[in-house]
Image 1 (spheres, helix red, strand yellow):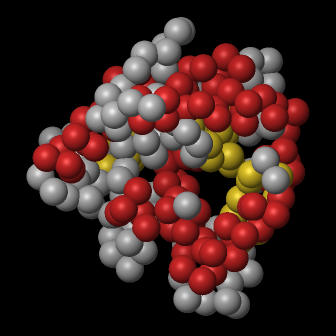
Image 2 (cartoon, one colour; image 1 turned 180 degrees about the vertical axis):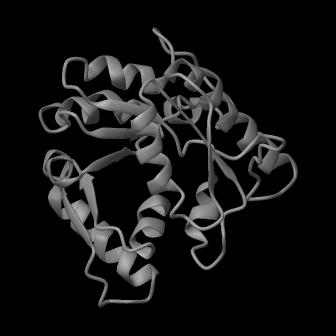
Length: 213
């Protein structure tokens, strides 16, 4: 919900998706309450296919166990769009520890999304998976973290970065081709471990020494 909250704040029109429309509608109302503004008129709830149909840019933020059915359900509505995949294979979603990552056959979660949607023309960008959810939810403060993105289409990465950088404090760093998501996704488990070890909720990453584009 943190990503949706931040983008609603930024003035973007946000369509929340869920398997059931009423659940998505409740989430939209919860965002209004969370932001303490019932007059917000740029967040709506729909089924996953309807949300994907309406959206120009799709952001996938689901547990790994829900990734395949969710992606399959929107396949008919992603043609030539940009899809930002924030999915991370963490063992906590299958009864294990949140500090442990498990490998997927065929590479990363983002690569699996790309494979499921093959032939649709969708441009998959891996991103938002290394930003702490607590930082996103703390909507009155800037997020002290870079966003590591990867993807095979440069224009899609630019589009994704422009949207993500509407979150105050976030700077996107292009890590290269989508295959780099295999490394970036693993960092989520490390960041969770660091936050637990150091009793923090907002530990993040900053990449230094690079020239700005």
